Image (cartoon, rainbow, N blue to C red; front, side, top):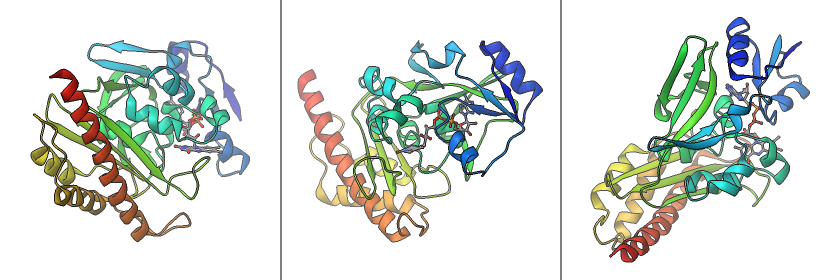
Length: 289
Ligand SMILES: Cc1cc2nc3c(=O)[nH]c(=O)nc-3n(C[C@H](O)[C@H](O)[C@H](O)COP(=O)(O)OP(=O)(O)OC[C@H]3O[C@@H](n4cnc5c(N)ncnc54)[C@H](O)[C@@H]3O)c2cc1C
């Protein structure tokens, strides 16, 4: 197996163009598991750890630009205010060791429906920046997941960054698993309220072939939510929101949980996330008044 080790972004793109079948590796917390278990034997690995741009973050117009190689520990330590749901999700990933190595770009690259970064990125309407020697393009996250572990990334492209809109309201993430730490989710859910646009974003994990949104639930809540005063949503609306989120899921029975349990847990997580974000919204509105 060849090991390609570029030290600049230009070299990395050139290497991917010359070797489209080379497998990119950043933290290696997914790739090394696959190699160690002999699930994959690629002709080449493309090591991205020496490319400095990938581990940088900062403002990009109205967005926060997060290099694809930013690890969860940095998201938690530095970006809690600018990417609240993603930081919350990052805190739930694995152990400190994995959070030090594992990256948001790696989560996107593998595109496991159970990846914890996906629901917050979906709920907040992020964009993925893909680059190749041919140029750069930005793909809305909602168009990024095209099938089970399949993404819109072309063979000669690398994930350069993810672009997150500035939060314009409260966000929440929650995840259900058999225990509180070191756990791949049985189901996960993220919610983002946008008080300026008066819209709602959702993201569902581990309950379909790809990470999913719940568009009917988003529309329902956007129409019912008291955007001016932040009055707590009526219990019947909270219940309906939970049901619409559960209906949007396309879960299967597998070793981690049944489809029925996943739907049920999504309804519960959606109701809880709504209660948390509605409270935060009301308190924020009261502070601004
Ligand atoms: C013990 C353990 C526990 C875990 N727990 C969790 C958990 O709780 N939640 C969770 O979501 N995940 C978990 N994971 C999975 C893993 O840590 C995450 O998916 C992590 O985000 C992968 O990031 P990485 O940088 O290590 O990716 P890598 O392993 O380096 O790469 C992962 C995939 O992305 C591709 N890739 C990486 N960077 C790029 C790039 N710039 N451009 C294009 N493709 C790229 C690779 O080719 C590969 O297909 C766990 C893993 C382990 C070993």
